[in-house]
Image 1: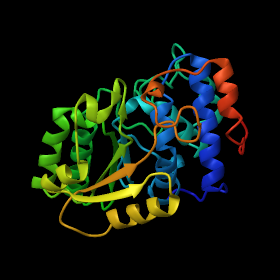
Image 2 (image 1 turned 60 degrees about the horizontal axis):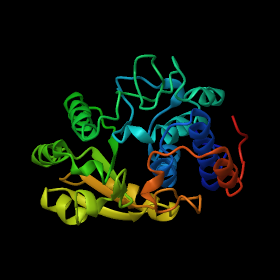
Image 3 (image 1 turned 180 degrees about the vertical axis):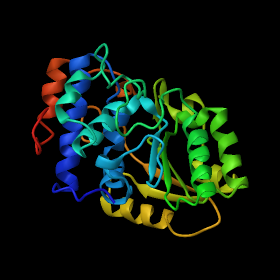
Image 4 (image 1 turned 90 degrees about the horizontal axis):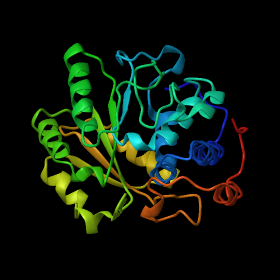
Length: 281
């Protein structure tokens, strides 16, 4: 497991949400909605379940759990979490989306940012990469798990379902996929755009073990991760029910905050709802 953080989950998630708002506002570009919505369950994963030591992190992922962010546009959350967990200095968050920064709008590997195994953000590809990584671990006898975070809007991509069939066919049981099931995408409600429908029924039909979870309830999240790690004969999909923009009242539940940067006034309103717990960057 990661070295024990001295901070509670509520303190971490409040500060991470502040980081997200401040990063995107300063850059005048970025994705706050999905980042805020996924904060709770991703923080629990990194602090309590991901067997990865920031000081010993390797891009090849040998002898450690691996995490892939398929929905690369929620990079503000990913970067804040990595920084707050000690993968790189917190002050570097101020360089988000700057020219030449290691913290680009979508995660990249060009400048060797710790915590990032592959470049991501071209939607639909992350599950395929995670399948390859998990198979590699199985072939080399590495007992660690592979995690990948996807979006429900992303699940309209055909490659997702090719990878789903592949994982089930090859019984990739050291793979845990997570879907942020917030019902929103850039153009509106998911079921009005592409109509992915009942994701539980779909993933079950594709041969996966499916768990559903309240993605904002730490106890429910912990239970889902524990169940996902139990021995079985199928890959596991955790469907996290979340609200886009969770934590900021005027952003919650609206697709309009998928990729919109707050104004200075909106930033102030948002930050007033989020306690500064660990110190702003």
